[in-house]
Amino acid sequence: MQLGRINKLTINRLTPPGAYLEDFKGDEVLLPKKYLIPEDEFQVGNEVEVFVFKDSQNRIVSTTEKPHLYLGTVALLNVVQVNTYGAFVDWGLDKNLFVPFIEQAQKMIEGKSYLVTLRYDNQTDRLFGSSKIGKVLEPCREDLTEQIVKGLVWHSTELGTKVIVNQRFEGLIFKNDINRRLTLGDELSFYVRKVREDGKLDLQLDPLGFEKYDSAYTALLNLLKDQKEIFLHDKSSPEEINDQTGMSKKLFKQTVGKLLKQQMIELSKQSIRLK
Image 1 (cartoon, rainbow, N blue to C red):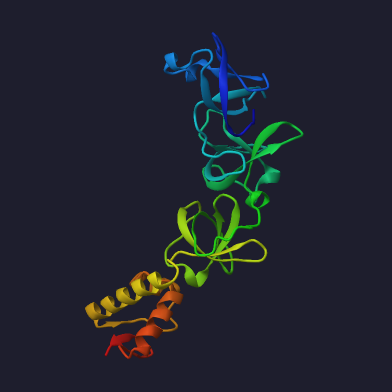
Image 2 (image 1 turned 180 degrees about the horizontal axis):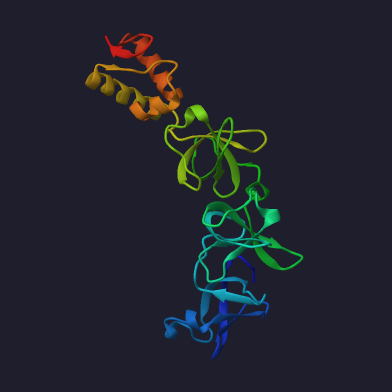
């Protein structure tokens, strides 16, 4: 059986403390009595799916409860306690998950939330948490170009915002492509623009291809028909553009260029208006 993962085990015997579950090697783990509900589903010989971890006495135990993260995955978790050894985060189980100081990307503060990954220490045979997420990410060797992926918002850089893609890869959405507020831990759909040689992904929030441009073209044209004039220009900030149009600055400039080429708009230093 594996610590930090869901294991399918067989009920070997029932005792007052609970059910003892057995894997194919004959190793046993206790499923405490409080989890044997309804009792008629927990009979000797039945298979059950449980999460396996260690309790505060370093004993291997199991639970039918589902934690917020599993071995190698990442989730946004709240710090419930900090002591001289590290921090403890709420990961959905009775026993909080320990994050040693050495595994903290930044010093954790009680009451705040951080992205945490679940890791396993071979030497001590223990699970622990880490906010040094880069350690568990791997280069992407799949052709994900133009595919939709799931991503967790990670942190901001000078170039843009880093994203954890499919719980495995590192992605980046550039500043000019950000058309909404991105908050730590947000789980969103992203479009893969490019898989770089180093295995990192270039992402965007807008659909790829003609669908994106057609939608933006129609939206901006309708906005101009409604307002006659919008006070945006080439030097407007990405935030101003997004507030008025819902677009990233890059998409806005591309759409304005298309309308200008079609001679449908006039530009001034301060605004855009329909001809």
